[in-house]
Image 1: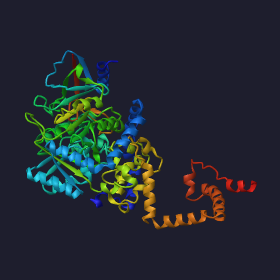
Image 2 (image 1 turned 90 degrees about the vertical axis):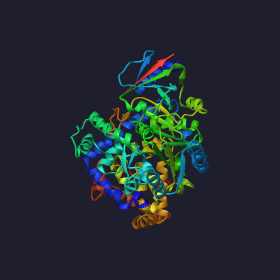
Image 3 (image 1 turned 180 degrees about the vertical axis):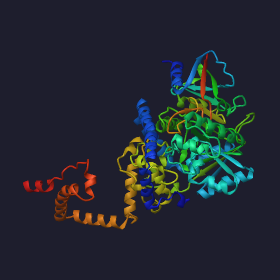
Image 4 (image 1 turned 45 degrees about the horizontal axis):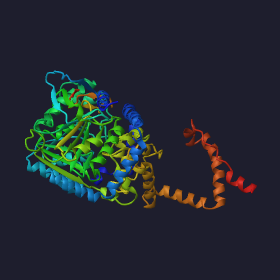
Length: 460
Length: 123
Protein backbone atom coordinates (compact mmCIF):
# COMPACT_ATOMS: atom_id res chain seq x y z
CA UNK A 1 0.00 0.00 0.00
CA UNK A 2 2.87 2.28 0.84
CA UNK A 3 4.29 1.55 -2.61
CA UNK A 4 0.86 2.18 -4.18
CA UNK A 5 0.36 5.65 -2.67
CA UNK A 6 4.03 6.63 -2.87
CA UNK A 7 5.03 9.21 -5.45
CA UNK A 8 8.73 9.02 -6.41
CA UNK A 9 10.52 12.34 -6.88
CA UNK A 10 10.53 12.46 -10.68
CA UNK A 11 7.02 11.13 -11.28
CA UNK A 12 5.17 14.35 -10.45
CA UNK A 13 7.19 16.35 -12.99
CA UNK A 14 6.93 13.68 -15.69
CA UNK A 15 3.16 13.22 -15.32
CA UNK A 16 2.53 16.95 -15.08
CA UNK A 17 4.55 17.58 -18.24
CA UNK A 18 2.34 15.11 -20.12
CA UNK A 19 -0.80 16.76 -18.74
CA UNK A 20 0.42 20.21 -19.81
CA UNK A 21 1.00 18.97 -23.36
CA UNK A 22 -2.53 17.53 -23.59
CA UNK A 23 -4.75 20.40 -24.75
CA UNK A 24 -7.97 18.42 -24.44
CA UNK A 25 -7.18 17.50 -20.84
CA UNK A 26 -6.24 21.09 -20.00
CA UNK A 27 -9.59 22.26 -21.31
CA UNK A 28 -11.45 19.55 -19.36
CA UNK A 29 -9.72 20.51 -16.10
CA UNK A 30 -10.35 24.22 -16.71
CA UNK A 31 -14.05 23.84 -17.34
CA UNK A 32 -14.41 21.10 -14.71
CA UNK A 33 -12.97 23.20 -11.90
CA UNK A 34 -14.45 26.54 -12.92
CA UNK A 35 -18.08 25.79 -12.13
CA UNK A 36 -17.65 24.29 -8.64
CA UNK A 37 -15.16 27.03 -7.78
CA UNK A 38 -17.62 29.77 -8.65
CA UNK A 39 -20.57 27.94 -7.06
CA UNK A 40 -18.71 27.57 -3.76
CA UNK A 41 -17.91 31.28 -3.65
CA UNK A 42 -21.54 32.21 -4.38
CA UNK A 43 -22.98 29.84 -1.80
CA UNK A 44 -20.51 30.94 0.89
CA UNK A 45 -21.49 34.54 0.24
CA UNK A 46 -25.16 33.66 0.60
CA UNK A 47 -24.56 32.44 4.18
CA UNK A 48 -25.19 34.98 6.94
CA UNK A 49 -21.69 34.51 8.44
CA UNK A 50 -19.50 31.99 6.71
CA UNK A 51 -16.41 32.93 8.76
CA UNK A 52 -18.13 32.11 12.03
CA UNK A 53 -19.37 28.81 10.60
CA UNK A 54 -15.85 27.92 9.41
CA UNK A 55 -14.43 28.73 12.87
CA UNK A 56 -17.02 26.50 14.53
CA UNK A 57 -16.37 23.69 12.06
CA UNK A 58 -12.62 23.99 12.66
CA UNK A 59 -13.15 23.84 16.44
CA UNK A 60 -15.39 20.76 16.13
CA UNK A 61 -12.93 18.93 13.91
CA UNK A 62 -9.90 19.75 16.07
CA UNK A 63 -11.66 18.74 19.31
CA UNK A 64 -12.53 15.44 17.61
CA UNK A 65 -8.96 14.88 16.43
CA UNK A 66 -7.60 15.61 19.94
CA UNK A 67 -9.94 13.03 21.47
CA UNK A 68 -10.14 10.56 18.62
CA UNK A 69 -9.74 7.38 20.69
CA UNK A 70 -12.64 8.35 22.91
CA UNK A 71 -14.93 9.06 19.96
CA UNK A 72 -13.95 5.89 18.11
CA UNK A 73 -14.82 3.89 21.26
CA UNK A 74 -18.07 5.79 21.71
CA UNK A 75 -19.03 5.28 18.07
CA UNK A 76 -18.16 1.56 18.15
CA UNK A 77 -20.26 1.01 21.29
CA UNK A 78 -23.26 2.86 19.84
CA UNK A 79 -23.02 1.13 16.45
CA UNK A 80 -22.80 -2.30 18.12
CA UNK A 81 -25.77 -1.45 20.33
CA UNK A 82 -27.69 -0.67 17.11
CA UNK A 83 -26.78 -4.12 15.74
CA UNK A 84 -23.77 -3.40 13.50
CA UNK A 85 -20.49 -5.32 13.59
CA UNK A 86 -17.52 -2.99 14.11
CA UNK A 87 -13.92 -3.79 13.26
CA UNK A 88 -10.89 -1.58 13.87
CA UNK A 89 -8.33 -2.06 11.10
CA UNK A 90 -4.76 -0.84 11.65
CA UNK A 91 -3.70 -1.22 8.03
CA UNK A 92 -5.12 -1.44 4.52
CA UNK A 93 -4.27 -5.15 4.41
CA UNK A 94 -6.14 -5.72 7.65
CA UNK A 95 -9.20 -3.83 6.34
CA UNK A 96 -9.21 -5.72 3.03
CA UNK A 97 -8.83 -9.06 4.80
CA UNK A 98 -11.86 -8.27 6.96
CA UNK A 99 -14.02 -7.29 3.98
CA UNK A 100 -12.98 -10.28 1.88
CA UNK A 101 -13.80 -12.50 4.89
CA UNK A 102 -17.30 -11.05 5.05
CA UNK A 103 -17.72 -11.67 1.31
CA UNK A 104 -16.48 -15.26 1.60
CA UNK A 105 -18.77 -15.99 4.52
CA UNK A 106 -21.74 -14.68 2.55
CA UNK A 107 -20.70 -16.54 -0.60
CA UNK A 108 -20.68 -13.20 -2.41
CA UNK A 109 -19.91 -12.95 -6.14
CA UNK A 110 -20.92 -9.37 -6.90
CA UNK A 111 -20.22 -6.22 -4.86
CA UNK A 112 -21.95 -2.90 -5.62
CA UNK A 113 -19.90 0.09 -4.56
CA UNK A 114 -20.79 3.67 -3.82
CA UNK A 115 -17.99 6.20 -4.24
CA UNK A 116 -15.30 5.83 -1.58
CA UNK A 117 -11.81 7.33 -1.81
CA UNK A 118 -10.85 5.20 1.20
CA UNK A 119 -11.65 2.05 -0.78
CA UNK A 120 -9.25 3.38 -3.45
CA UNK A 121 -6.63 4.04 -0.77
CA UNK A 122 -6.80 0.46 0.56
CA UNK A 123 -7.13 -1.03 -2.97
CA UNK A 124 -10.22 -2.99 -2.03
CA UNK A 125 -11.22 -3.83 -5.62
CA UNK A 126 -7.95 -5.66 -6.19
CA UNK A 127 -8.35 -7.60 -2.93
CA UNK A 128 -11.89 -8.61 -3.96
CA UNK A 129 -10.79 -9.60 -7.46
CA UNK A 130 -8.11 -11.82 -5.89
CA UNK A 131 -10.83 -13.96 -4.26
CA UNK A 132 -12.98 -13.97 -7.39
CA UNK A 133 -15.49 -11.31 -6.34
CA UNK A 134 -16.45 -8.69 -8.92
CA UNK A 135 -16.72 -5.13 -7.61
CA UNK A 136 -18.67 -2.62 -9.71
CA UNK A 137 -18.38 1.11 -9.10
CA UNK A 138 -21.86 2.68 -9.14
CA UNK A 139 -20.96 6.36 -8.88
CA UNK A 140 -21.05 7.59 -12.48
CA UNK A 141 -17.56 9.13 -12.37
CA UNK A 142 -16.04 6.09 -10.67
CA UNK A 143 -17.78 3.79 -13.14
CA UNK A 144 -16.21 5.72 -16.02
CA UNK A 145 -12.75 5.43 -14.45
CA UNK A 146 -13.29 1.71 -13.80
CA UNK A 147 -14.18 1.20 -17.48
CA UNK A 148 -11.08 3.18 -18.46
CA UNK A 149 -8.92 1.18 -16.06
CA UNK A 150 -7.66 4.41 -14.52
CA UNK A 151 -7.56 5.97 -11.06
CA UNK A 152 -9.75 8.92 -10.03
CA UNK A 153 -8.16 12.28 -10.78
CA UNK A 154 -10.30 14.42 -8.45
CA UNK A 155 -11.53 13.31 -5.02
CA UNK A 156 -15.06 14.46 -5.79
CA UNK A 157 -15.34 14.23 -9.56
CA UNK A 158 -13.24 11.16 -10.41
CA UNK A 159 -13.63 11.55 -14.18
CA UNK A 160 -13.04 15.31 -14.26
CA UNK A 161 -10.42 15.01 -16.99
CA UNK A 162 -12.68 12.98 -19.32
CA UNK A 163 -14.90 14.62 -21.92
CA UNK A 164 -18.35 13.38 -23.02
CA UNK A 165 -16.66 12.07 -26.17
CA UNK A 166 -14.13 10.06 -24.11
CA UNK A 167 -16.94 8.63 -22.00
CA UNK A 168 -19.10 7.73 -25.01
CA UNK A 169 -16.13 5.80 -26.43
CA UNK A 170 -15.76 3.86 -23.18
CA UNK A 171 -19.50 3.11 -23.03
CA UNK A 172 -19.55 1.94 -26.65
CA UNK A 173 -16.71 -0.58 -26.25
CA UNK A 174 -17.87 -4.06 -27.12
CA UNK A 175 -21.51 -3.04 -27.63
CA UNK A 176 -23.87 -0.60 -29.29
CA UNK A 177 -22.58 2.90 -29.88
CA UNK A 178 -23.69 5.44 -27.28
CA UNK A 179 -24.04 9.10 -28.32
CA UNK A 180 -21.70 11.55 -26.56
CA UNK A 181 -24.74 13.40 -25.19
CA UNK A 182 -25.19 14.01 -21.48
CA UNK A 183 -28.67 12.48 -21.24
CA UNK A 184 -27.82 9.43 -23.33
CA UNK A 185 -24.76 8.69 -21.22
CA UNK A 186 -26.65 9.10 -17.95
CA UNK A 187 -29.49 6.85 -19.21
CA UNK A 188 -27.04 4.18 -20.26
CA UNK A 189 -25.30 4.24 -16.87
CA UNK A 190 -28.65 4.11 -15.07
CA UNK A 191 -29.73 1.09 -17.13
CA UNK A 192 -26.50 -0.83 -16.63
CA UNK A 193 -26.03 -0.11 -12.95
CA UNK A 194 -29.63 -0.69 -11.84
CA UNK A 195 -29.09 -4.41 -12.38
CA UNK A 196 -25.93 -4.28 -10.25
CA UNK A 197 -27.79 -2.71 -7.31
CA UNK A 198 -30.51 -5.33 -7.59
CA UNK A 199 -28.30 -8.40 -7.80
CA UNK A 200 -25.28 -7.47 -5.66
CA UNK A 201 -24.60 -9.67 -2.65
CA UNK A 202 -22.80 -6.94 -0.75
CA UNK A 203 -22.94 -3.15 -0.88
CA UNK A 204 -19.75 -1.25 -0.02
CA UNK A 205 -19.68 2.44 0.85
CA UNK A 206 -17.35 4.92 2.48
CA UNK A 207 -18.58 7.35 5.11
CA UNK A 208 -18.60 11.12 5.00
CA UNK A 209 -19.03 11.13 8.76
CA UNK A 210 -19.59 8.67 11.60
CA UNK A 211 -21.69 10.02 14.49
CA UNK A 212 -20.29 8.83 17.83
CA UNK A 213 -23.42 9.67 19.81
CA UNK A 214 -25.75 7.48 17.71
CA UNK A 215 -23.41 5.01 15.96
CA UNK A 216 -24.68 6.26 12.58
CA UNK A 217 -22.91 6.38 9.24
CA UNK A 218 -23.58 9.58 7.29
CA UNK A 219 -23.48 9.24 3.49
CA UNK A 220 -23.81 12.21 1.18
CA UNK A 221 -24.51 11.67 -2.54
CA UNK A 222 -26.19 13.48 -5.41
CA UNK A 223 -26.91 10.53 -7.67
CA UNK A 224 -28.58 8.31 -5.08
CA UNK A 225 -26.04 5.50 -5.44
CA UNK A 226 -25.34 5.62 -1.70
CA UNK A 227 -29.04 5.07 -1.00
CA UNK A 228 -29.44 2.11 -3.34
CA UNK A 229 -26.19 0.41 -2.28
CA UNK A 230 -27.33 0.52 1.35
CA UNK A 231 -30.96 -0.46 0.71
CA UNK A 232 -31.00 -3.33 -1.79
CA UNK A 233 -28.03 -5.70 -1.13
CA UNK A 234 -28.44 -7.93 1.96
CA UNK A 235 -25.10 -6.82 3.44
CA UNK A 236 -23.69 -3.32 3.90
CA UNK A 237 -19.99 -2.77 4.52
CA UNK A 238 -19.04 0.79 5.45
CA UNK A 239 -15.38 1.84 5.28
CA UNK A 240 -14.70 4.65 7.73
CA UNK A 241 -11.46 6.61 8.03
CA UNK A 242 -10.82 6.84 11.75
CA UNK A 243 -10.77 10.66 11.58
CA UNK A 244 -14.35 10.79 10.20
CA UNK A 245 -15.82 10.76 13.72
CA UNK A 246 -18.29 13.49 14.67
CA UNK A 247 -19.15 13.60 18.37
CA UNK A 248 -22.79 14.67 18.28
CA UNK A 249 -25.62 15.25 15.82
CA UNK A 250 -25.50 18.96 16.67
CA UNK A 251 -21.90 19.00 15.37
CA UNK A 252 -22.94 17.14 12.23
CA UNK A 253 -25.49 19.88 11.51
CA UNK A 254 -22.63 22.43 11.36
CA UNK A 255 -20.41 20.29 9.13
CA UNK A 256 -23.23 19.41 6.72
CA UNK A 257 -23.93 23.11 6.22
CA UNK A 258 -20.41 23.49 4.85
CA UNK A 259 -19.77 20.20 3.03
CA UNK A 260 -22.09 20.48 0.03
CA UNK A 261 -21.68 24.27 -0.23
CA UNK A 262 -17.91 23.87 -0.46
CA UNK A 263 -18.05 20.89 -2.82
CA UNK A 264 -20.62 22.04 -5.37
CA UNK A 265 -22.37 25.13 -4.02
CA UNK A 266 -25.55 23.23 -3.12
CA UNK A 267 -27.08 24.01 0.29
CA UNK A 268 -27.32 20.24 0.81
CA UNK A 269 -26.54 17.43 -1.62
CA UNK A 270 -29.55 15.63 -3.11
CA UNK A 271 -29.31 12.78 -0.61
CA UNK A 272 -27.95 12.99 2.91
CA UNK A 273 -28.49 9.63 4.56
CA UNK A 274 -27.95 8.61 8.20
CA UNK A 275 -27.76 4.85 8.62
CA UNK A 276 -27.94 3.25 12.04
CA UNK A 277 -27.66 -0.53 12.28
CA UNK A 278 -29.30 -3.15 10.04
CA UNK A 279 -32.93 -3.29 8.85
CA UNK A 280 -35.44 -3.29 11.69
CA UNK A 281 -38.45 -5.54 12.38
CA UNK A 282 -41.11 -5.27 9.71
CA UNK A 283 -38.95 -3.35 7.20
CA UNK A 284 -38.99 -4.65 3.63
CA UNK A 285 -35.54 -3.48 2.56
CA UNK A 286 -32.22 -2.44 4.04
CA UNK A 287 -29.28 -4.73 4.89
CA UNK A 288 -29.69 -7.75 7.17
CA UNK A 289 -26.10 -7.31 8.28
CA UNK A 290 -24.00 -4.17 8.66
CA UNK A 291 -20.21 -4.19 9.01
CA UNK A 292 -18.37 -1.01 9.87
CA UNK A 293 -14.61 -1.03 9.29
CA UNK A 294 -12.79 1.84 11.03
CA UNK A 295 -9.46 2.26 9.27
CA UNK A 296 -6.20 3.81 10.51
CA UNK A 297 -3.71 3.04 7.70
CA UNK A 298 -1.15 5.65 8.68
CA UNK A 299 -3.51 8.26 10.15
CA UNK A 300 -1.98 7.72 13.60
CA UNK A 301 1.27 9.23 12.20
CA UNK A 302 -0.51 12.58 12.03
CA UNK A 303 -2.18 12.60 15.40
CA UNK A 304 0.52 14.31 17.38
CA UNK A 305 2.21 17.52 16.44
CA UNK A 306 1.78 20.10 13.75
CA UNK A 307 0.16 17.97 11.08
CA UNK A 308 -2.88 16.82 13.04
CA UNK A 309 -4.80 19.68 11.41
CA UNK A 310 -4.80 17.63 8.22
CA UNK A 311 -7.07 15.10 9.95
CA UNK A 312 -9.74 17.81 10.06
CA UNK A 313 -10.22 17.48 6.28
CA UNK A 314 -13.82 16.69 5.22
CA UNK A 315 -12.89 15.83 1.58
CA UNK A 316 -15.00 18.53 -0.10
CA UNK A 317 -12.54 19.08 -2.97
CA UNK A 318 -12.62 22.89 -2.73
CA UNK A 319 -8.81 23.14 -2.44
CA UNK A 320 -8.34 21.19 -5.69
CA UNK A 321 -10.68 23.47 -7.63
CA UNK A 322 -8.82 26.65 -6.65
CA UNK A 323 -5.25 25.35 -6.88
CA UNK A 324 -3.22 26.81 -9.79
CA UNK A 325 -0.90 23.79 -9.70
CA UNK A 326 -3.67 21.16 -9.65
CA UNK A 327 -5.46 22.96 -12.48
CA UNK A 328 -2.40 22.63 -14.70
CA UNK A 329 -0.72 19.43 -13.49
CA UNK A 330 -3.95 17.42 -13.20
CA UNK A 331 -4.89 14.84 -10.58
CA UNK A 332 -2.76 11.92 -11.66
CA UNK A 333 0.47 13.88 -11.11
CA UNK A 334 -0.13 13.56 -7.39
CA UNK A 335 -0.58 9.78 -7.48
CA UNK A 336 -3.50 7.37 -7.74
CA UNK A 337 -5.83 8.51 -4.92
CA UNK A 338 -5.55 11.94 -3.29
CA UNK A 339 -4.64 15.02 -5.29
CA UNK A 340 -4.44 18.78 -5.14
CA UNK A 341 -3.30 20.57 -2.00
CA UNK A 342 -5.04 18.12 0.37
CA UNK A 343 -3.28 15.23 -1.36
CA UNK A 344 0.07 17.04 -1.39
CA UNK A 345 -0.14 17.32 2.41
CA UNK A 346 -1.85 14.03 3.24
CA UNK A 347 0.04 11.55 1.06
CA UNK A 348 3.57 12.31 2.38
CA UNK A 349 2.22 12.09 5.91
CA UNK A 350 0.52 8.72 5.29
CA UNK A 351 3.39 7.05 3.43
CA UNK A 352 6.42 8.92 4.83
CA UNK A 353 8.02 12.02 3.40
CA UNK A 354 10.85 10.06 1.77
CA UNK A 355 8.28 8.17 -0.33
CA UNK A 356 6.59 11.30 -1.71
CA UNK A 357 9.29 13.99 -1.65
CA UNK A 358 8.01 15.97 -4.64
CA UNK A 359 4.50 16.55 -3.33
CA UNK A 360 5.28 19.33 -0.80
CA UNK A 361 6.75 21.25 -3.74
CA UNK A 362 3.59 20.87 -5.85
CA UNK A 363 2.37 24.26 -4.71
CA UNK A 364 3.04 27.91 -5.40
CA UNK A 365 2.24 28.65 -1.71
CA UNK A 366 -0.30 31.20 -2.91
CA UNK A 367 -2.67 30.23 -0.11
CA UNK A 368 -5.80 29.85 -2.27
CA UNK A 369 -6.28 26.36 -0.79
CA UNK A 370 -6.25 27.58 2.80
CA UNK A 371 -8.71 30.36 1.93
CA UNK A 372 -11.09 27.87 0.29
CA UNK A 373 -10.94 25.27 3.07
CA UNK A 374 -14.28 25.13 4.92
CA UNK A 375 -12.62 23.77 8.06
CA UNK A 376 -9.72 26.25 7.87
CA UNK A 377 -6.81 23.85 7.47
CA UNK A 378 -3.73 26.03 6.80
CA UNK A 379 -2.80 23.84 3.85
CA UNK A 380 -0.09 26.05 2.33
CA UNK A 381 1.57 26.49 5.73
CA UNK A 382 1.60 22.72 6.21
CA UNK A 383 3.20 22.36 2.77
CA UNK A 384 5.91 24.81 3.80
CA UNK A 385 6.49 22.88 7.03
CA UNK A 386 6.80 19.66 5.04
CA UNK A 387 9.47 21.33 2.88
CA UNK A 388 11.31 22.32 6.06
CA UNK A 389 11.13 18.69 7.20
CA UNK A 390 12.44 17.53 3.84
CA UNK A 391 15.46 19.81 4.23
CA UNK A 392 15.94 19.04 7.91
CA UNK A 393 15.92 15.31 7.33
CA UNK A 394 18.34 15.55 4.45
CA UNK A 395 15.79 14.28 1.89
CA UNK A 396 16.22 17.42 -0.23
CA UNK A 397 18.56 17.10 -3.21
CA UNK A 398 22.31 17.60 -2.64
CA UNK A 399 22.47 20.60 -4.96
CA UNK A 400 19.59 22.29 -3.15
CA UNK A 401 21.22 21.75 0.24
CA UNK A 402 24.61 23.09 -0.88
CA UNK A 403 22.99 26.15 -2.48
CA UNK A 404 21.13 27.01 0.71
CA UNK A 405 24.25 26.44 2.85
CA UNK A 406 26.21 28.91 0.75
CA UNK A 407 23.37 31.40 0.82
CA UNK A 408 23.01 31.14 4.59
CA UNK A 409 26.77 31.55 5.10
CA UNK A 410 26.98 34.55 2.77
CA UNK A 411 24.05 36.43 4.26
CA UNK A 412 25.22 36.06 7.84
CA UNK A 413 28.07 38.60 7.20
CA UNK A 414 27.72 42.19 5.92
CA UNK A 415 30.44 42.12 3.27
CA UNK A 416 29.28 39.05 1.30
CA UNK A 417 25.67 40.20 1.79
CA UNK A 418 26.44 43.56 0.16
CA UNK A 419 28.39 41.85 -2.58
CA UNK A 420 25.42 39.55 -3.26
CA UNK A 421 22.92 42.40 -3.62
CA UNK A 422 25.28 44.26 -5.95
CA UNK A 423 25.66 41.08 -8.00
CA UNK A 424 21.90 40.57 -8.00
CA UNK A 425 21.31 44.09 -9.30
CA UNK A 426 23.66 43.49 -12.18
CA UNK A 427 22.45 39.97 -12.90
CA UNK A 428 18.85 41.11 -12.85
CA UNK A 429 19.50 43.26 -15.88
CA UNK A 430 21.79 40.80 -17.63
CA UNK A 431 19.48 37.81 -17.14
CA UNK A 432 16.65 39.60 -18.93
CA UNK A 433 18.86 40.09 -21.99
CA UNK A 434 20.22 36.61 -22.56
CA UNK A 435 20.47 33.07 -21.30
CA UNK A 436 17.73 30.97 -19.64
CA UNK A 437 16.38 34.01 -17.77
CA UNK A 438 15.33 35.71 -20.98
CA UNK A 439 12.27 33.60 -21.66
CA UNK A 440 11.16 34.02 -18.08
CA UNK A 441 11.63 37.79 -18.23
CA UNK A 442 9.32 38.20 -21.22
CA UNK A 443 6.09 39.66 -19.89
CA UNK A 444 7.39 39.98 -16.35
CA UNK A 445 8.75 43.01 -14.57
CA UNK A 446 10.65 42.66 -11.32
CA UNK A 447 10.91 45.51 -8.88
CA UNK A 448 14.43 46.93 -9.04
CA UNK A 449 16.55 45.90 -6.09
CA UNK A 450 17.46 49.02 -4.18
CA UNK A 451 20.63 49.94 -2.36
CA UNK A 452 18.67 50.68 0.77
CA UNK A 453 20.83 48.92 3.38
CA UNK A 454 23.92 50.85 2.40
CA UNK A 455 22.20 54.19 1.84
CA UNK A 456 20.76 54.19 5.31
CA UNK A 457 24.09 53.41 6.92
CA UNK A 458 25.82 56.22 5.03
CA UNK A 459 23.38 58.91 6.16
CA UNK A 460 23.54 57.92 9.83
CA UNK B 1 -41.70 34.89 5.67
CA UNK B 2 -43.40 31.94 7.36
CA UNK B 3 -41.68 28.55 7.57
CA UNK B 4 -44.11 27.18 5.00
CA UNK B 5 -43.39 29.99 2.54
CA UNK B 6 -39.64 29.66 3.09
CA UNK B 7 -39.86 25.92 2.58
CA UNK B 8 -41.84 26.32 -0.65
CA UNK B 9 -39.37 28.85 -2.05
CA UNK B 10 -36.26 26.85 -1.16
CA UNK B 11 -37.76 23.54 -2.29
CA UNK B 12 -38.48 25.13 -5.66
CA UNK B 13 -34.87 26.32 -5.89
CA UNK B 14 -33.70 22.80 -4.99
CA UNK B 15 -35.69 21.41 -7.94
CA UNK B 16 -38.98 20.24 -6.39
CA UNK B 17 -42.37 20.98 -7.92
CA UNK B 18 -44.32 22.30 -4.93
CA UNK B 19 -48.08 21.65 -4.70
CA UNK B 20 -50.58 22.96 -2.13
CA UNK B 21 -53.14 20.37 -1.13
CA UNK B 22 -53.70 18.51 -4.42
CA UNK B 23 -51.54 15.49 -5.02
CA UNK B 24 -50.59 15.17 -8.69
CA UNK B 25 -51.60 11.82 -10.18
CA UNK B 26 -48.56 10.61 -12.09
CA UNK B 27 -48.46 7.07 -13.35
CA UNK B 28 -45.62 5.01 -11.95
CA UNK B 29 -44.58 7.66 -9.42
CA UNK B 30 -43.28 6.58 -6.01
CA UNK B 31 -45.23 8.27 -3.23
CA UNK B 32 -43.62 8.85 0.16
CA UNK B 33 -44.88 10.30 3.41
CA UNK B 34 -42.28 12.79 4.66
CA UNK B 35 -41.68 12.89 8.42
CA UNK B 36 -40.31 16.42 8.35
CA UNK B 37 -39.45 19.27 6.01
CA UNK B 38 -36.52 21.68 6.32
CA UNK B 39 -37.30 25.28 5.45
CA UNK B 40 -33.67 26.47 5.14
CA UNK B 41 -32.81 24.04 2.38
CA UNK B 42 -36.24 23.03 1.03
CA UNK B 43 -35.63 19.38 1.92
CA UNK B 44 -38.00 16.55 2.81
CA UNK B 45 -36.95 14.04 5.47
CA UNK B 46 -37.90 10.38 5.08
CA UNK B 47 -37.79 7.84 7.93
CA UNK B 48 -37.37 4.21 6.92
CA UNK B 49 -40.20 2.01 8.22
CA UNK B 50 -42.35 -0.93 7.08
CA UNK B 51 -44.56 1.63 5.27
CA UNK B 52 -41.62 3.65 3.96
CA UNK B 53 -39.05 1.35 2.30
CA UNK B 54 -35.54 2.78 2.00
CA UNK B 55 -35.15 2.36 -1.77
CA UNK B 56 -38.67 3.18 -2.99
CA UNK B 57 -38.18 6.89 -3.62
CA UNK B 58 -35.05 6.11 -5.67
CA UNK B 59 -36.40 3.41 -7.98
CA UNK B 60 -38.81 5.39 -10.14
CA UNK B 61 -38.44 8.31 -12.55
CA UNK B 62 -40.82 10.41 -10.45
CA UNK B 63 -41.01 10.79 -6.66
CA UNK B 64 -43.94 12.51 -4.95
CA UNK B 65 -43.49 13.27 -1.26
CA UNK B 66 -46.41 14.28 0.94
CA UNK B 67 -45.47 16.66 3.75
CA UNK B 68 -47.65 17.99 6.59
CA UNK B 69 -47.08 21.71 7.01
CA UNK B 70 -46.66 21.39 10.76
CA UNK B 71 -43.75 18.99 10.10
CA UNK B 72 -41.71 21.84 8.62
CA UNK B 73 -38.73 22.77 10.81
CA UNK B 74 -36.27 25.62 10.25
CA UNK B 75 -33.23 23.44 9.52
CA UNK B 76 -30.82 20.65 10.40
CA UNK B 77 -30.32 21.71 14.04
CA UNK B 78 -34.03 21.47 14.79
CA UNK B 79 -34.30 18.19 12.88
CA UNK B 80 -31.54 16.55 14.88
CA UNK B 81 -33.07 17.81 18.15
CA UNK B 82 -36.45 16.43 17.13
CA UNK B 83 -35.16 12.97 16.20
CA UNK B 84 -32.69 12.51 19.07
CA UNK B 85 -34.98 10.09 20.91
CA UNK B 86 -36.67 8.42 17.98
CA UNK B 87 -33.93 7.62 15.54
CA UNK B 88 -34.92 5.50 12.52
CA UNK B 89 -32.59 2.88 11.00
CA UNK B 90 -32.30 5.07 7.92
CA UNK B 91 -33.01 8.79 7.83
CA UNK B 92 -32.81 10.42 4.40
CA UNK B 93 -32.78 14.15 3.77
CA UNK B 94 -33.87 14.59 0.15
CA UNK B 95 -32.99 17.92 -1.47
CA UNK B 96 -34.10 17.87 -5.10
CA UNK B 97 -33.87 15.25 -7.87
CA UNK B 98 -31.07 12.74 -8.41
CA UNK B 99 -28.27 14.64 -10.13
CA UNK B 100 -24.74 14.10 -11.32
CA UNK B 101 -22.01 16.48 -12.37
CA UNK B 102 -19.61 13.69 -13.20
CA UNK B 103 -19.60 14.32 -16.95
CA UNK B 104 -17.71 17.55 -17.64
CA UNK B 105 -19.22 18.98 -14.42
CA UNK B 106 -22.43 19.61 -16.36
CA UNK B 107 -25.63 18.89 -14.45
CA UNK B 108 -27.69 15.90 -15.53
CA UNK B 109 -30.78 14.67 -13.67
CA UNK B 110 -32.01 11.16 -12.92
CA UNK B 111 -28.80 9.15 -12.84
CA UNK B 112 -29.83 6.50 -10.31
CA UNK B 113 -32.81 8.12 -8.64
CA UNK B 114 -35.78 10.19 -9.83
CA UNK B 115 -35.57 12.75 -12.61
CA UNK B 116 -38.61 14.59 -11.32
CA UNK B 117 -39.55 15.31 -7.69
CA UNK B 118 -42.74 16.75 -6.25
CA UNK B 119 -43.64 17.80 -2.74
CA UNK B 120 -47.28 18.10 -1.73
CA UNK B 121 -47.95 20.37 1.25
CA UNK B 122 -51.00 19.33 3.24
CA UNK B 123 -52.40 21.06 6.33
